[in-house]
Length: 569
Image (cartoon, one colour):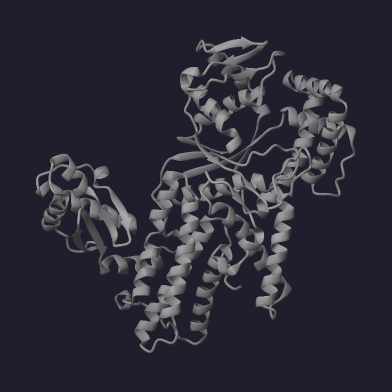
């Protein structure tokens, strides 16, 4: 709804500016949100600078020339110094309530748009996901959900490293040590991988065996490829279980080795050679990207002729470029250099570059993590710890409920707390995940938002039991005139704009902040305005409808964040 309000303000303002003798593009209207208005424009300030006029006087002239058409969402426009302030009218508020009630779970959805391939997580299959990996998963999954709600056709992919050095170590480890398959399969792989690295440190001569395995895979040795596949399959099966628990689903798992088998890796190497950028450095084939600002060359072939992860990644991106209109990659900060080199190399051979979202690392108060050294807390352990603590909270708050209820809500609240606390921080900022703070109902994280949704459900259920409300009943939104009612309606109206903004900027934390603010607005409304206790029957019906609207938009926000919306807590 807010996007429509802005579109109407744009049209009205452009016409008024033309009336006072100036031409202006939409982008030059410089709209922004303001604590003093629903929408404010700095156009007068900009035009005054260009045409040597007084900005305050120009703003007043523009406002005097404004004409608000009948039925507009704009109620009033005024000048405040060089600013032109727009205020929403009753039609905007009432139409928002009607739209939420009509569209329900579709409220906030955009029109159909382009096809996007989004790659995220893609952790090496050498053990379980740890908390460092899941920031990638949560950012990527939330972005995919935002983009889908914005109208994009999104396919989410996991790029499986099934032939690099780490996988050679895993395969070698599986031959050397016995797998404990009574454990979760990715944890069993981690056990032997850690043991193998200890062995390699003690006996460096074993590195030759790892190199030999990599060469065998590159030339298509069937037995070695089968060994690699078995190890990778075990690790990926466990990773999928963890992702599913986190409410993360990939549409496709694409294996790195498929691009070697198809000949795409050799093709990409030849295309890069044809640019004249390649040279030999100590026997390895490297790419000179100095004209793109990279002093360091990019190695695309080892001295023994084998390809690298980077080479195969280039082939993968060449394939992806033909599958979608846009390509999006989610990478950790340690990939900043290589992702820049990847984009530059693709650009040099005329292949569409990916849009890259770089995120800084998340850690636990305990410190950093390394799978190779066995110094990590797995995501599974973290989830168990968090849901156990959430169960205790539910048991304290709702001792009369069944074990099944407590367990279901605890899982929803625990996983929600993890997802929310990680995604609420802008990707470019590092963060420490503190599970105790994330679970605090008073800290306005996921449990707070979920509780607001449950409260709305509870109010409506109570109203039905008391025969105080019929959801099918026609209501009169014009009766919603209290400040807290208007604030809540305006906050709900922002949902589509927040989705649009998050999709354009690839910033999922924008939605997380909005969801908390929406919960705030709902709780303020319920605190200051009687709902079921309202004496006037029509006012009561309108307020209950507003509670239902809040429930819908809270549920839509939580769903887009990949977080469960419990009806009772």
